[in-house]
Image 1 (cartoon, helix red, strand yellow):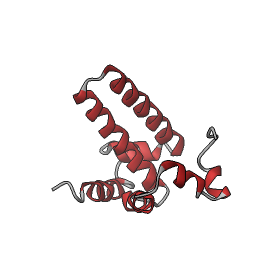
Image 2 (cartoon, helix red, strand yellow; image 1 turned 180 degrees about the vertical axis):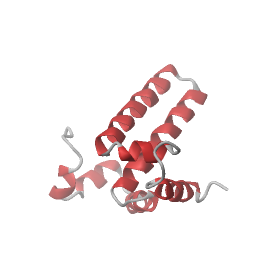
Image 3 (cartoon, one colour; image 1 turned 90 degrees about the vertical axis):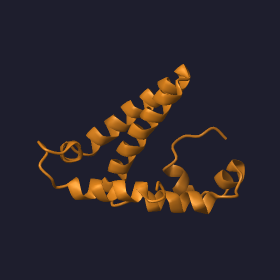
Image 4 (tube, helix red, strand yellow; image 1 turned 120 degrees about the horizontal axis):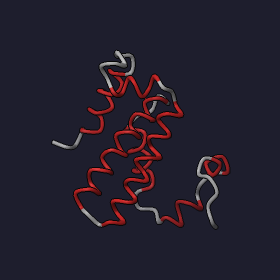
Length: 117
């Protein structure tokens, strides 16, 4: 039932990319541009952190769902989808976090931001 939910959501997002912004939240957000989507992800990430801090399971789930949804929109803006993220997670499966980080290339690190060593 949930196995392909992310792929289905990605298809819906893609189908609404060029929809009427007055009729589609996704179209409206995408029409506002990349910065609007990134701002929304930042807002949703903050709300997710606050829900986790409060410890209310239903809020944690709801806010995480909002965050994931907006991340799917951001992926679509870049011609990417959940399969790309899932492939990366599969690549990392079985690696320790320390091992995975050590295996990143210099180019990969530039996308990771400043990280403490």
